[in-house]
Length: 212
Image 1 (cartoon, rainbow, N blue to C red):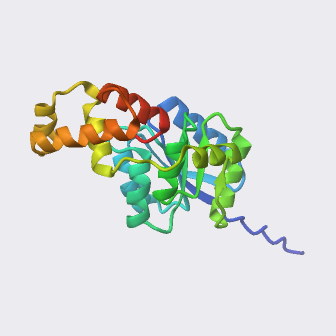
Image 2: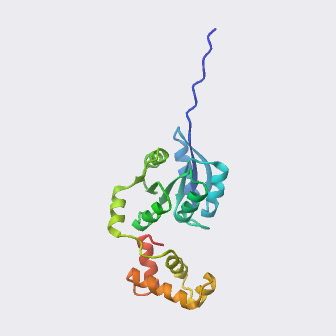
Image 3: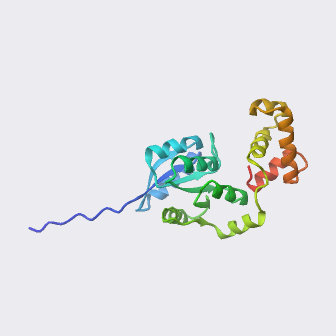
């Protein structure tokens, strides 16, 4: 009686998915799990949970949304690159802003995709980044080059972001552990660099450019 040998199992790409909206996260996970060679091994809803989840699940690729509580996807990407450098990073976003693309690449991301891209494109990007490729929409790459570099320093960016809720300079100084004059100077410089009329306008411009 002849014996039949079992077919060799195909290695599956292990994926960590970070997205704060549960319906979107579950939909993305379901779509990726339909791919025969991709497996979602971890899901988190906060940016500050990404690194610990990566340490536990040991994914090959991390899909990170930009807007998340605790820590943005861009901040999580930079931290993940330092703490678990073997993981490839794909940034997902609702908005294809040029500034986001530049910051994603600086954070070590291998791909940058908008959420309304076809599911097949996302699965293809996962496979390609695992092969060492970069995956960036050509139109978005051209827009990023045309927009130029982000003029804000990290400190200017953090102070401007903190000011978005309308806090006074004194409140910002206390919250950020800076002097009143230092906060005023950072905001003044940010307003000048963005060509804004005031700090609220600077926040708007910086957000539209993807600098915040």
